[in-house]
Image (cartoon, rainbow, N blue to C red; front, top):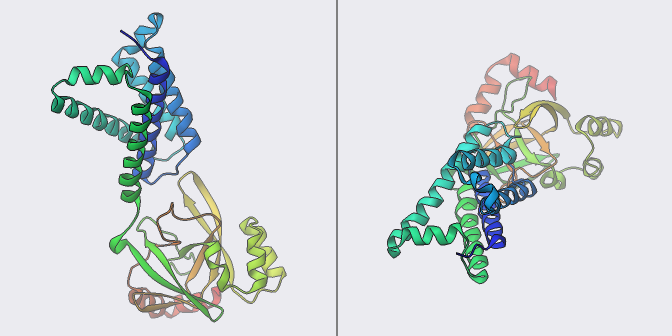
Length: 307
């Protein structure tokens, strides 16, 4: 029996890496490619070590379970819902094994097929071609599955300082950022996308990508006529933080204008190639929000005072 250690390593590295990427795309967590690659390399080393005579005990199911859990923990230990991500990794791994077993039954030799894959008795061309095909399939299925389409994407018109432009936003129910003064929803938007609506002085200051507090001080020192403020927020991987926000003339959703809506500026992208540059977590129809903000005189006065 011939064991190709190098092929065992490469095959397991590729499969583990792609599975970790698939989990991240399905869960919508950051794609930590280098971390996933290192975890995949660890899985490849483990798979190769199993075939050494002195390390055959590593093939015990308990060891496989422990190594798999350790690899998933190393990949997703920084995420908030790490246990769910680890469980999803095992589910995808089991699904892949089930597909291979089903193919084996289709060809009439499941044990032979599983054995050849386990020992990586595969030609290099077939190995690399199969890995590329698997990568393409996972990229297509899970990247498109992670994208938001249909009714979740919406057009939003943003007006600032007398200039308006249409953008694509994601209706994200997980975005609960609110104006602490009146409780109205805040539009979270990529800073780079909004720069062309801002006066040159403000845009140049924001291009420096300083911390929100520093940018706020610079803007007011420059005598900006726009109304900027700082908003506290919480997100995955960060307990608390601040976002620089600017008050718009209005935003328009579903042909309804919501005046004086705050726009929080994100220095990084808010999507991973999803085709949108903003996040909206309020009611999709602006009419209800506009009425709720103006119905209470106290809230309306607080809103005007806030900028």
